[in-house]
Amino acid sequence: MNMIYDHKAAKKATNLSINSNLLSKARDLGINLSATLEHALEAEIRQSARKEWLKNNKTALDNCNALTSENGLFADKHRKF
Image (tube, rainbow, N blue to C red; front, side, top):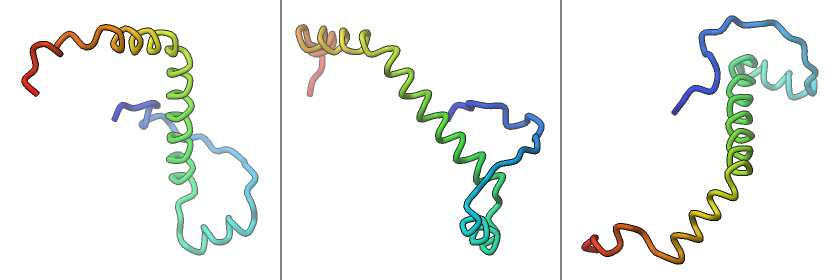
C-alpha cells in the first residue's frame, strides 16, 4: 500500500475536544489515542482522495467503459477462455 504521508515526520502536539465518556472508556482500555487518531485520519484521507480521484476522472472512465462496451477488449479474439 502506498504511503499518503511521511510516517517519519515529527509529532506535533495539538488540542481537540472529545466526548468525555468515550475518552474515559478508551483510557480504561489502554487505547493509544494518538495512534488511533493517526490510523483514522489516514483512512479518512485515503477515502477522500479516492472520491476526489473518481470525480476528477469520471469522464475518462465513462468514455473508456463506453468504448469497451461498443468494441470489446483488444484481447477478446485472442484469449482461449
